[in-house]
Image 1: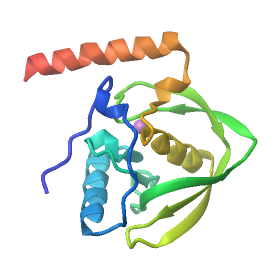
Image 2: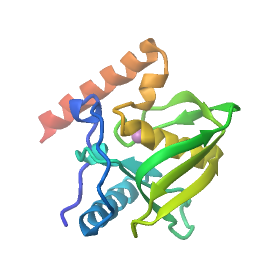
Image 3: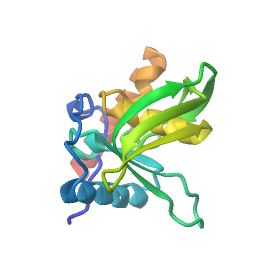
Image 4: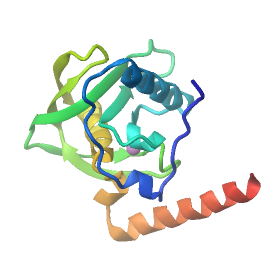
Amino acid sequence: MAALSIIIAPDSRLKGHCEPVERVDKEVRKLMDGMLDAMHKHQGIGLAAPQVGVLKRVIVIDMAREGEEPAPMRIANPEIVWTSEEEVLGEEGCLSLPQQFGDVVRPKKARVRYLDQDNQEREIEAEDMLARCILHEMDHLEGILFVDHISALKRNIILRKLTKMKKLMEAAE
Ligand code: NI
Protein backbone atom coordinates (compact mmCIF):
# COMPACT_ATOMS: atom_id res chain seq x y z
CA MET A 1 0.00 0.00 0.00
CA ALA A 2 1.36 3.41 -0.94
CA ALA A 3 2.10 5.60 2.06
CA LEU A 4 -0.85 7.73 3.05
CA SER A 5 -0.20 11.45 3.07
CA ILE A 6 -1.50 13.71 5.79
CA ILE A 7 -3.77 16.63 4.90
CA ILE A 8 -2.64 19.98 6.28
CA ALA A 9 -5.13 22.58 7.55
CA PRO A 10 -6.86 24.69 6.48
CA ASP A 11 -8.60 22.16 4.23
CA SER A 12 -12.32 21.46 3.78
CA ARG A 13 -11.61 17.70 3.98
CA LEU A 14 -10.77 18.18 7.66
CA LYS A 15 -14.14 19.80 8.36
CA GLY A 16 -16.51 16.96 7.52
CA HIS A 17 -18.55 14.57 9.66
CA CYS A 18 -17.36 10.96 9.48
CA GLU A 19 -19.55 7.89 9.08
CA PRO A 20 -19.25 4.77 11.25
CA VAL A 21 -17.75 1.65 9.70
CA GLU A 22 -20.17 -1.25 9.30
CA ARG A 23 -17.66 -3.63 10.78
CA VAL A 24 -13.89 -3.82 11.13
CA ASP A 25 -12.96 -5.97 8.17
CA LYS A 26 -9.82 -6.42 6.08
CA GLU A 27 -10.29 -3.05 4.37
CA VAL A 28 -10.64 -1.18 7.66
CA ARG A 29 -7.62 -3.00 9.13
CA LYS A 30 -5.62 -1.97 6.07
CA LEU A 31 -6.66 1.64 6.62
CA MET A 32 -5.69 1.41 10.32
CA ASP A 33 -2.25 0.01 9.48
CA GLY A 34 -1.67 2.63 6.79
CA MET A 35 -2.64 5.35 9.25
CA LEU A 36 -0.23 3.95 11.88
CA ASP A 37 2.58 3.98 9.31
CA ALA A 38 1.87 7.59 8.33
CA MET A 39 1.60 8.60 12.01
CA HIS A 40 4.85 6.91 13.02
CA LYS A 41 6.63 8.44 10.04
CA HIS A 42 5.76 11.89 11.37
CA GLN A 43 6.41 11.02 15.05
CA GLY A 44 2.76 11.54 15.93
CA ILE A 45 0.87 9.93 18.83
CA GLY A 46 -2.58 9.93 17.22
CA LEU A 47 -4.23 10.18 13.82
CA ALA A 48 -7.83 10.22 12.60
CA ALA A 49 -9.05 8.91 9.23
CA PRO A 50 -10.16 12.32 7.84
CA GLN A 51 -6.52 13.44 8.16
CA VAL A 52 -5.71 10.97 5.38
CA GLY A 53 -8.84 11.93 3.42
CA VAL A 54 -11.13 9.10 4.59
CA LEU A 55 -14.43 10.20 6.18
CA LYS A 56 -14.80 7.11 8.42
CA ARG A 57 -14.91 6.87 12.20
CA VAL A 58 -11.46 5.34 12.57
CA ILE A 59 -8.56 6.53 14.73
CA VAL A 60 -5.16 5.18 15.70
CA ILE A 61 -3.07 6.03 18.73
CA ASP A 62 0.40 5.08 19.94
CA MET A 63 1.57 6.77 23.12
CA ALA A 64 4.86 4.82 23.35
CA ARG A 65 7.82 7.14 23.59
CA GLU A 66 10.98 6.92 21.54
CA GLY A 67 12.94 3.83 22.51
CA GLU A 68 9.86 2.13 23.98
CA GLU A 69 8.06 -0.81 22.40
CA PRO A 70 5.35 0.46 20.01
CA ALA A 71 1.87 0.23 21.59
CA PRO A 72 -0.52 0.83 18.70
CA MET A 73 -4.26 1.14 19.36
CA ARG A 74 -6.65 0.64 16.46
CA ILE A 75 -10.06 2.14 17.17
CA ALA A 76 -13.27 2.21 15.12
CA ASN A 77 -16.63 3.84 15.91
CA PRO A 78 -15.50 5.29 19.27
CA GLU A 79 -18.26 6.51 21.58
CA ILE A 80 -17.89 8.43 24.78
CA VAL A 81 -19.57 6.54 27.62
CA TRP A 82 -18.53 8.93 30.38
CA THR A 83 -16.22 11.84 31.03
CA SER A 84 -15.02 13.20 34.36
CA GLU A 85 -16.30 16.54 35.57
CA GLU A 86 -12.74 17.43 36.39
CA GLU A 87 -11.09 19.17 33.46
CA VAL A 88 -7.46 19.90 32.76
CA LEU A 89 -5.64 22.34 30.52
CA GLY A 90 -2.93 20.83 28.33
CA GLU A 91 -0.90 21.64 25.26
CA GLU A 92 -1.92 19.98 22.01
CA GLY A 93 -0.45 19.68 18.57
CA CYS A 94 -1.73 17.91 15.47
CA LEU A 95 -0.10 16.36 12.41
CA SER A 96 -2.53 18.42 10.28
CA LEU A 97 -1.23 21.60 11.94
CA PRO A 98 2.53 20.94 11.91
CA GLN A 99 4.65 22.83 14.45
CA GLN A 100 1.61 24.59 15.90
CA PHE A 101 0.48 24.22 19.51
CA GLY A 102 -2.29 25.45 21.72
CA ASP A 103 -3.66 24.91 25.22
CA VAL A 104 -7.00 23.09 25.29
CA VAL A 105 -9.28 22.29 28.23
CA ARG A 106 -10.49 18.67 28.24
CA PRO A 107 -11.97 16.22 30.76
CA LYS A 108 -9.25 14.59 32.86
CA LYS A 109 -10.73 11.12 32.35
CA ALA A 110 -12.90 9.53 29.69
CA ARG A 111 -14.46 6.12 29.24
CA VAL A 112 -14.78 5.18 25.59
CA ARG A 113 -16.41 2.20 23.86
CA TYR A 114 -15.11 1.16 20.45
CA LEU A 115 -14.46 -1.70 18.05
CA ASP A 116 -10.89 -3.01 17.93
CA GLN A 117 -9.01 -4.42 14.92
CA ASP A 118 -10.81 -7.77 15.37
CA ASN A 119 -14.25 -6.11 15.38
CA GLN A 120 -14.54 -6.85 19.11
CA GLU A 121 -16.30 -4.32 21.31
CA ARG A 122 -14.04 -2.89 23.97
CA GLU A 123 -14.21 -0.21 26.59
CA ILE A 124 -11.31 1.67 28.10
CA GLU A 125 -11.00 4.23 30.81
CA ALA A 126 -8.31 6.70 29.86
CA GLU A 127 -6.86 9.59 31.78
CA ASP A 128 -4.53 12.51 31.30
CA MET A 129 -2.53 12.29 28.06
CA LEU A 130 -4.33 9.23 26.73
CA ALA A 131 -7.77 10.72 27.44
CA ARG A 132 -6.66 13.98 25.80
CA CYS A 133 -5.35 12.14 22.77
CA ILE A 134 -8.51 10.04 22.28
CA LEU A 135 -10.78 13.09 22.66
CA HIS A 136 -8.62 15.12 20.25
CA GLU A 137 -8.83 12.32 17.65
CA MET A 138 -12.58 11.90 18.20
CA ASP A 139 -13.02 15.63 17.55
CA HIS A 140 -11.50 15.08 14.09
CA LEU A 141 -14.42 12.72 13.31
CA GLU A 142 -16.76 15.72 13.69
CA GLY A 143 -14.52 18.06 11.70
CA ILE A 144 -13.20 19.77 14.83
CA LEU A 145 -9.52 20.72 15.15
CA PHE A 146 -7.73 21.71 18.37
CA VAL A 147 -7.61 25.30 17.10
CA ASP A 148 -11.42 25.34 17.25
CA HIS A 149 -11.08 25.17 21.05
CA ILE A 150 -8.77 28.20 21.38
CA SER A 151 -9.38 31.91 20.86
CA ALA A 152 -10.29 33.13 17.37
CA LEU A 153 -7.25 35.39 17.46
CA LYS A 154 -4.80 32.52 18.07
CA ARG A 155 -6.68 30.28 15.65
CA ASN A 156 -6.41 32.81 12.85
CA ILE A 157 -2.70 33.36 13.48
CA ILE A 158 -2.07 29.61 13.24
CA LEU A 159 -4.24 29.09 10.15
CA ARG A 160 -2.60 32.04 8.39
CA LYS A 161 0.85 30.60 9.11
CA LEU A 162 -0.21 27.24 7.71
CA THR A 163 -1.74 28.80 4.60
CA LYS A 164 1.54 30.59 3.96
CA MET A 165 3.53 27.40 4.59
CA LYS A 166 1.34 25.43 2.16
CA LYS A 167 1.86 28.06 -0.56
CA LEU A 168 5.62 27.84 -0.09
CA MET A 169 5.46 24.01 -0.25
CA GLU A 170 3.38 24.14 -3.45
CA ALA A 171 5.77 26.64 -5.01
CA ALA A 172 8.70 24.34 -4.20
CA GLU A 173 7.11 21.32 -5.89
NI1 NI B 1 -5.11 16.10 15.29
